[in-house]
Length: 231
Ligand SMILES: C[S@@+](CC[C@H](N)C(=O)[O-])C[C@H]1O[C@@H](n2cnc3c(N)ncnc32)[C@H](O)[C@@H]1O
Image (cartoon, rainbow, N blue to C red; front, top):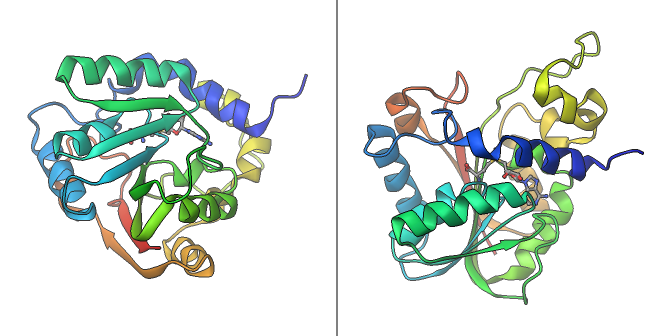
């Protein structure tokens, strides 16, 4: 039976959910300087609290829980149930109130104009249909609302001569990777252009250099970026 691209993606994240936070490159340690930098960056990127914030592809809830801690009303979605279970447990431990739901980044199921801000971290590289997602996100934003995309360029260009070895490649096979537009982006220009094509205004990109400098184990050799764009 052939597995859909999204089933492969969701299958991978579901299979590693229990170990996701053990990798410092994914989620920094509590009380670390890097976590302090993340909190400062997310505070600056989001509107003044309290705002209605949707964290898309929340994983174990890293951004959602920071946003809730800053005083926002937060809803968070993901398709990998084991990720959502980790996120709910983390919210309970931190006594933070986040509405975690099953939901697809490409077609989030909420009424129009439900949110002041939509945020996602480390999703864009693996988003199967960024154009459809942007159109959907725009409908969910109130006038003047914003999208914040946080990501980086983690991977080498696709190579046909490299075998699909390892757990990651058993889900993200070459055929899956080839379908993902994010694997053809090597800087933020095509990402910013996509937002402009979808009618977002004031598209701006900043480098997350302070986070990169503070990170014990950065996820890649270069600092990630945060793009913000307004409906
Ligand atoms: C690298 S993790 C990032 C998790 C979290 N945002 C963070 O910053 O730690 C990618 C997440 O995207 C989720 N994901 C991938 N495609 C998705 C989709 N179409 N809809 C919802 N979640 C998706 C995966 O299940 C996984 O939890």
